[in-house]
Image (cartoon, rainbow, N blue to C red; front, side, top):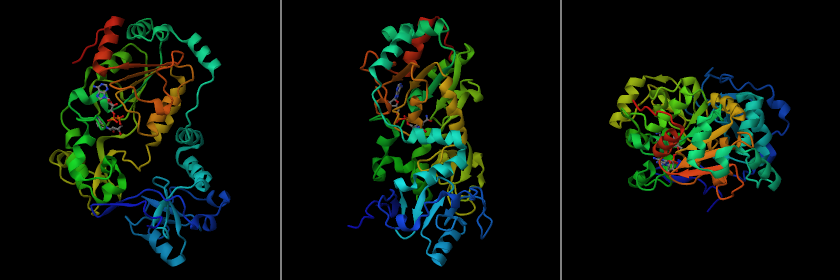
Length: 420
Ligand code: CNA
C-alpha cells in the first residue's frame, strides 16, 4: 500500500487525513516568510474576483478560488505545476501532487503568520497555545500555594461549601464552560453518551467514525446523513434547570461569561443575556451555503432540518446552519472572548466530555490558582490537565446530573431557582 493510505473511502467519498511526509514540501516551499507578508487573506481570486473561499499558492503567492467556486486554483496548478496551496478559510495546506492535505512542523511558522493575519496577533498566539498545549505536572510548591489561597469550599470540596462561597459572594467573575450534557434532560441527545448519544445511533450509516457526519468535507460530498441525523437536535425544546441556574448567576451579578459548545440556544431561551454567551460552535439562527457561502433562508432550512431533507443552494452545493463543523475555523469572536477567561475567579465546567478542541483547552486559560469545578456524569478533562484525585489540586468534580447538582447548590445557597 502506498503512503496515501491515509484517505479512507466511505460510501464512494473520501474522509481525508493529512499526510505527514510530502516529498514536495522541502523543495518547493519558500521558507522565507517575507514573501508571504504581502499576502492579504481577504484578496479576491485573481482570475474571477471571487471573495469567498480562496487559496494562496505557496510557491508564487497568487490567490485563486477553490474547486467549489471556479477552480482557478486547480487551473493555476495545471499551468505552473505549483503544487502547494493554503486555504484562507481553514488554513489547511494541500499538495496537488500528493493529492492530499498536509501536516508538517515546517509549516508551523507559515501557519502562525496567517493565523496572526486572520485573528490578530494576541488571539493567534492564544490559539496556538491551545493547540500546542502540553500536560505538565504542577510543581509541588505551586500546588501548596494554590491550596493555601483556595477558598472555603476547596478545603472540603463539597457542594455545600461551594454553595456557601457563592452565597457569600466570594466569586464575582464566574466563567462557565458547557456541553451537550446540560441539554439532555430537555430531550436533546448528546454525542457520546454510550446508549442514548447521537453517535450510538449512527451504526446503520456504516461510517468509519461518527464524527464524519459533522466534518465539512464529508458534508459537502454527502449531506444526506447530516440532514437525517440532525433531526433529533431540532424542535421546540425547553431550557433545563441548569440553564435557569445560569440565569440565576447572572441575576446575582456573578456570571462573567458562558462558553457553550451547544447550538440549541437554550441559554438564550432561559433568559441569559446574549452578551454573556460565547457560542463557540455556532448556532442555528442563520444558514449559508457550505461552498459559495451565499445566505440560505433560515425558515426553509428549519423545514429541511425537521423533514430530514437536504437544503440545496442555487449553486448546486448543500447549505447548512451556521454551526461550526469539524474542519472549519471557529468564529474569531470565540478567540477574542477567550481572553476574558484570564479575569475569571471560578470556572465551572458542565455536561461535556471535553474531547473537542480547541474548546477543551479553555480550562487552561483561567489563572493557575483559580478553582475549576467539573459537574458531569463522568469525570472528564484529565487529558487537558484536570486533576481530581490529588487532594492538593484546585480541581474538584461533582459526579451527577447537572440539573440535580445545580439545584442542590441553589438550595444550600438559599437561592430560589425559578424554572419558568
Ligand atoms: P459529548 O461529547 O456528547 O459529552 C457529553 C457529556 O455530558 C458526557 O461526558 C456525558 O457523560 C455528560 N452528560 C450527559 N448527560 C448529562 C447530564 N444530564 N448531566 C451531567 N452530565 C451529562 O458532548 P460535548 O458537548 O462534550 O461535545 C461537544 C459537541 C457536542 C459540540 O460540538 C456540540 O455542538 C455537540 N452537541 C450539541 C448539542 C446541543 O446543542 N444540545 C447536542 C448534541 C451535540
